Structures are given as C-alpha cells and as structure tokens.
Amino acid sequence: AQTVTQSQPEMSVQEAETVTLSCTYDTSESDYYLFWYKQPPSRQMILVIRQEAYKQQNATENRFSVNFQKAAKSFSLKISDSQLGDAAMYFCAFQGAQKLVFGQGTRLTINP
Amino acid sequence: NAGVMQNPRHLVRRRGQEARLRCSPMKGHSHVYWYRQLPEEGLKFMVYLQKENIIDESGMPKERFSAEFPKEGPSILRIQQVVRGDSAAYFCASSSRWSGRSGANVLTFGAGSRLTVL
Image (cartoon, rainbow over all chains, first blue to last red; front, side, top):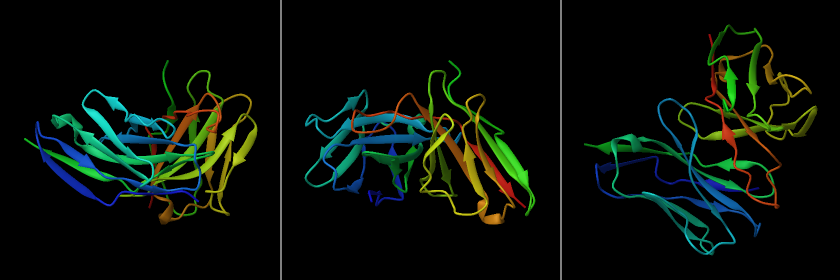
C-alpha cells in the first residue's frame, strides 16, 4: 500500500520570504502522480500543483514550485514570496493506479 | 459550473441516530469519492463509486456505513446509529474518469460536510 509522510506538522515563515514543505512517499509503482493541496480555514480542498512521475522537469505554478526526487521518493513544495493568504494546511497526495492517498498535513503560518 | 456540491454543510446528530450526507458531482462527472477527515488529520479514503456501482470500498468501516450513487440524483453517504467517533468532516470529490494509469485524474473536492455527534 502507498503511504505519504509529511514530517513537519507546523511551519512558519515571514511574509515575502520563501518556505519549503517536505513530503516523502512509498510505492512500488513506476507510473504515478503527486499533488499538493491547500486547505484554508474554510476547509475547501484546493489543488495547488501536480507532478507526473514520468516527467523529470519540476512543476511550477507562479509562486509555487516542487522539487521532485523520484529515486529518493521525495516531493517538496516551495512557496516563494509568501503572502498572508498562503496560510493554510497543506497536504501532499499520491495517486497511483487507484485512489488518492494523503499525508497528514503541514500547518503553514505566515508572520506579517 | 457549480462545482461539487455537498449538503448539509453542518449536521448535528445524537448518538444512535442516522446521518445522511449528500454529494452532487460536477456536471459531466460520473465518478465520486468519499473521504473522511478527523480533527488535525489528513483525508482518509472511504469509498469510490460510479453511477450505480461501488468500485472500491476498502476504506469503509464494515458496519453502519454505506454509500450509493444512483442513476439519478446525488451520491449518499449514510451512517447508521452514529457514535461520537463518527464526528468528522466528510468530503466528496468527483472526476470525469477513473484515476488510473491512463493519466492523472484530478479530483475536484466539495466544501465538506461537518458531522457532530452529541
């Protein structure tokens, strides 16, 4: 079974600074997809970024980028120029042949 | 497109009562997933359904929980004889096709239904 581990329960960063959230996963599959979801206090799950495992190039979406290390099974999220609106729970997720599996989440606080 | 609609947003039940949570997928989506989120935890998969079929219920508790996605109408997650441990946020997600090797299938999530059992 696939597992997703987020080792940082909480992180904080100064506004306008850069922060990196860690995620590791375990799988025996070779074809899969990785996602970062954001969950603000409204509890809505919002897709931030996704990465196809067969692509070597790291995905980027504006201020959000990932560092995908397939051999190490690592998928970290970097948020540049942090904004107050980035404050939320962030969940890493793995999708292989079947269901989407989530990590435990990292609570990100932005300090003004 | 109204997105994935879940109702009620908040539901309060006393122990022993039944809870019914409804999910209307995005227009054009025929695949529905239910996830449960306990306080301060990640989302845990419960069940995956297509119209009139349960495809994967490996995350569903063996008793008291059931799900359906009829040909017409929303998907229903039903919890019978609720207990305090059932208190959680229940999220529904939908997709246009099966999440499999044919390609990433991004799930669109609803806003969740928060169940409180007194």
